[in-house]
Length: 134
Image (tube, rainbow, N blue to C red):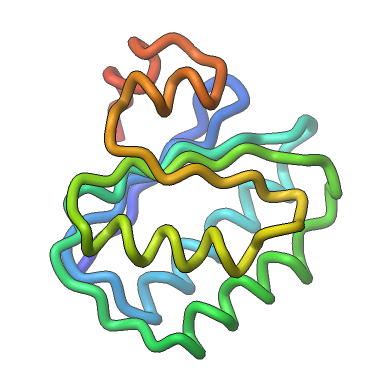
């Protein structure tokens, strides 16, 4: 079973997913994200630590539905940055599939192995990302 934890720091939604990522957890993730976006007064960028996902039980249709839901519900319209911090080919692969499905949209997604690269992409100090307390 997987878990999702999230916290907003400055204008960054920080999220951590671990364990098994399935359709139910992915939908929980998106629902929380939509709530955070609805209550925000500025564009929120995203930092997702997905290094501890150890199993993925999502079909392509599940991933497609999530990507389409995000496009349908994202109301700000402003470009936002999303960084997925990965550690294995498994979590890299699923994040890259999601990135490909949202290509050409306001979501500018990078999938990165190094936290320094994540911080550079998001334009934040690495200490902010190193010290997230969920």
